[in-house]
Picture: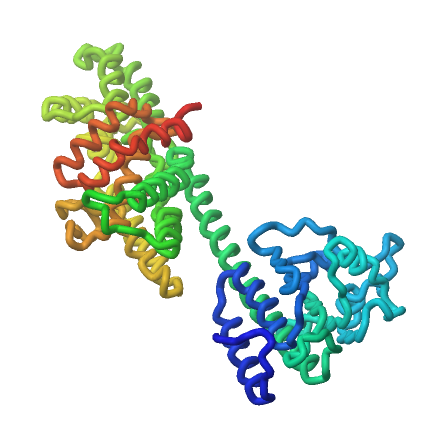
Length: 502
Ligand SMILES: [Fe+2]
Ligand SMILES: [Fe+2]
């Protein structure tokens, strides 16, 4: 908008200017630029030499100086550099209303105050203004003070304009009726624009806290994954910021905007949200026979019963060895060979007596679980676990993310995909996976390898974790370029210092 101070506006031009200012204010999303624009335009429209913008404090007890501007003195303070001027109290210490300060009076009453000469006005205390003049050599004269009312008619601030300037003579004159009306109209447009920005910021803060709360709830759900989501989010963001610093190499052309970083942050905090639906005994399955409790306990009891019979039954051999073998299998920390499964089957066929009935030592379901070759999860449970990403997508894609965050569901739900197409749930491959999805997948694996708070497994030493990641990068499971950056920028070191050092 091209406008000039001191221009003698025609009435129609003023209206057009006011309309333009309204559009400009409503489009401004940066709060500091918005505050500057309000005071700039208020001075322009009312032909004032200077102005002060006060905003009402949250407790409605004081007016805070936000921006102060004076063209003659070439002063512009506030948004860039903090204004540490003492606020104007709306109430006296005894709780009575402060009508002696003109801005407090306007905030309390909503009236517009138009003063021809502040040195001659008796109804308000202008000691502060006189003090300002003494220090600067300025002469404050005419003053227009207007309340800033938002869409709910609440007063959120006060606009105080000083010294209307005659565009022709350049002399200080009183604020005329037209300028007063213009000032009032602008103050209300400004208040609506400010409230809108405030509402958007409040809403964003609320959503952000909600997202973090959900991520923390997932972490809290299981001691086995405690802190996982939080650490994955931190690692993901550290990688994204490192990519943004790259000036050459494979990431030279990749730059995440603030909105994209926000999108990635939300995706990482919510990547395991589908685990809300995963039964805890599966998430936490520490042994092969664990369901709501570890069924190894029952097998021990059965073997106790058997032991008594064994006393009369020489064929049973060493029940103690067999129990130790079953316990070893149950832990799931070693690969199960064919020979071990054969031995398991033999032991399973042993029987014990209960209520005069002979029962096999192990049920088919127990045999199936103990036969799990690697880890503690059987096929059905692995499917349930894997399903958490499908649920993540389902939950997140049902949320109306704004356009700038529209990729959150995809990024979050792709964290178990691998570049070579061997991941799940969709078996996506390199060309389908965005850099964001690759970063998150990388962070998810690295956190799981190095986490120290998993009760059933020891944290991997950093060197070994890096070797595993190098191996995964070599196989095309994770992005090699991300791994190289991770090493080169020593992101793992920073991460270890922050997250793994206690
Ligand atoms: Fe996951
Ligand atoms: Fe995860």
